[in-house]
Length: 55
Image (cartoon, rainbow, N blue to C red; front, side):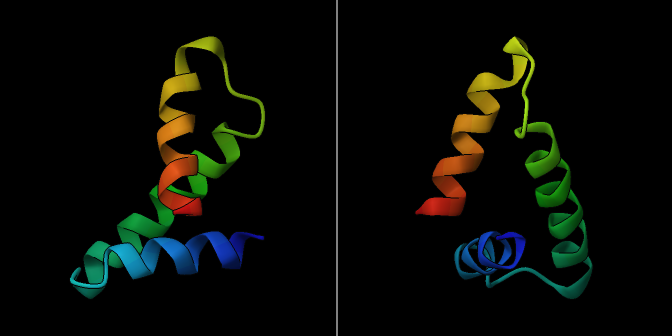
C-alpha cells in the first residue's frame, strides 16, 4: 500500500531533485501515519493527501 501511494506521488512530482524526493518521501510517510486516525484538525489535510495519492 505504501509503495502504491509513494509511486503515485512520484508521478506527480517527477521534476524534484534527489534531496527534494527524500524530503517528500518523509512527508508522505508522516502524512500517511497521521491520516490513519487523524485528529479533527487534520481532516482537511488528510483529504488533500488522499486526493494527491489516489489521483
